[in-house]
Each structure stands twice: as C-alpha cells, then as structure tokens.
Picture 1 (cartoon, rainbow, N blue to C red):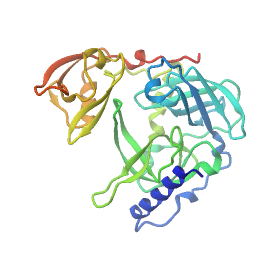
Picture 2: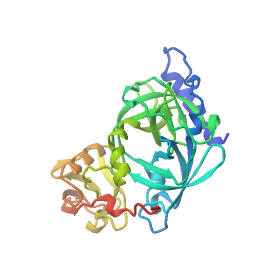
Picture 3: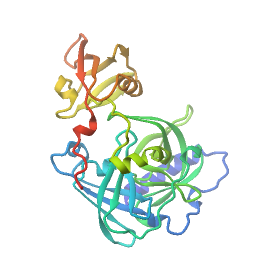
Picture 4: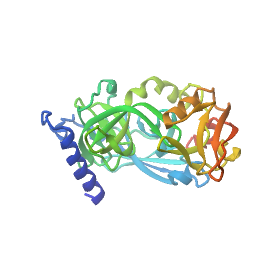
Length: 339
C-alpha cells in the first residue's frame, strides 16, 4: 500500500467516524459484491499527441480505470482520461492487454466511452439507479486492481458541483473516505450495480456547520449517462446543442471570480483576457460564484454566441466592458483520433 493511499484511508476513516456518530455501525467495507463484479473494472492507458489542446493541463500519458458495461467490451470511464487520445489500451484483471477505440466524449457530464477492439470476455456491470442513492448509504469505490483496490465508503453528500474548468454537474455524488486512484473508478452499490464514475478527490466532500470538512471523492452519477448513451454510441457525443465556451479556468475568492488560467488560442485568449483578471458580470448580471457564472454564460445561447462581460483587468482600477465570441468546445478539441 502506498503512503498516499494509507494516508487517504486513515484521514478519511477518522473524519467519517465523526460524521457517522449515532448511526448503526454497518461497515461499508462489508458490502457484499457478486462474483466477477470487480473483474469488470479495467485499467485504461491513453496516449495523447503533444499538440492536443488538453496536453498542457492533462499531460500526454494518462492512466485510470473504467467499468465494462456490455458484452462487446464497451467501457465507461471519466472523459478526461481519453479526451483527444490517439491510442488507448485496456488491461484486464487477468493481465490481458487489448487495444481500444475512443467511442465518445461528453463534456457536459464528464463521461467517456471506449470499446475494446477484441472481446474482453468479461461479465459486464449492470447500471444501477443512482437517483436512489441517499446520504449515509454504504458503497464501494473501486479502481482497477481487484479487492486490494476497493475501498468501503459512505455517501456523505449529494449536491451541485461547479468545476473551475467551465463545468457544472447538477447532482454530484460525494463519498468518503477518499480513494486515491479516483480517475474512472467505479462506485458500486450494495446490490453490485454501477452507480457512478470517479472524477475527483476533494477536500470538502462533506462540510457541516459544526464539523471540519471531510475529504473524499466526487462521482458522476450513472443516471446521467442513461439518457445520452444512445447518442454517444451513434454520434460520439450527445445530440444537445453545444454550450458557449470561453477557455478559462477560474477561482472564487471572497465572492469574487478571478481568472487563474487562459487556454492558448481559446476565445478568451483571442479577446485579450488574462490570468489575474476579475470577472464582475456577464450580460449585466453580477457574479458571485462559478455556478452563477456558468448559468448566465450558458443562458445566452449556443457556442459561438457573443458574450458581453464586465471585467476588471489585473493591472487596472476601472472595469471595462467587452464582448467575447464564444466557441463550441468540441470543435476546439482534437477528438476521435483513434478511429
């Protein structure tokens, strides 16, 4: 066991014990998984060209997990692992390595799909009902690696999650203790079904009024995949119109939104936005959270719409009004390179 894994489990268990005071002490580690459930969790390795749009922030060699969800070797994972990949391979629990194709990527949910080029001969995981997953429910968070990579956990929160990379998930699942190998990890219910896919480790999976924040993981609920799965298989992405995208990452400090990074060649870069600029309003609506920022931005129309913004440049004392011509993020990225 690595020091990071040991520390994450130790800290998470201490905090979780405090959170669960007064609750029946049914161990999450005691969730009974059916035969072959963990075998359906595979390792994914992806290679991404150095000139890919995401190479700067996510690197050119990525590794994580995914869950097999059909008899033909379809694997669901977290999208950032396989986004813009030129080569993907799957490693099974018995050590087989199989090349795979990228099937789909959905920026809005964060899901990615790949399919093995030859049969995996694994029993697929059944998609569960994540909408029924309540706080304090015992679950298993499992990455590739069998029982040694499966951690008993609890659901500690269900809430909206706003990511700094222009991402908003309406009903994220937060669990604790934290699993350090979270990328593409499977969230498994007591009935052995797949309830979510791992995205992040967070410092505040749970934060109560009278308790210190509890570190844990954020999972994308599997119910978010069901209505878009057909479109993703047919077209490589959902059929919904693309949202306006600027190409900024942002931080909130005391209710103020600061740009922390501007992606090269993005709409924001072309408009002259820079790291350290303060975003005051979009379309005349003052901003006090990432959630408010994204909701207002996306309410303006589709990707390509002009976005009126009020900005305080980092070197200025007077705000300026500007328009940024947004983009369709799918057209900005270099996708479908494994076909």
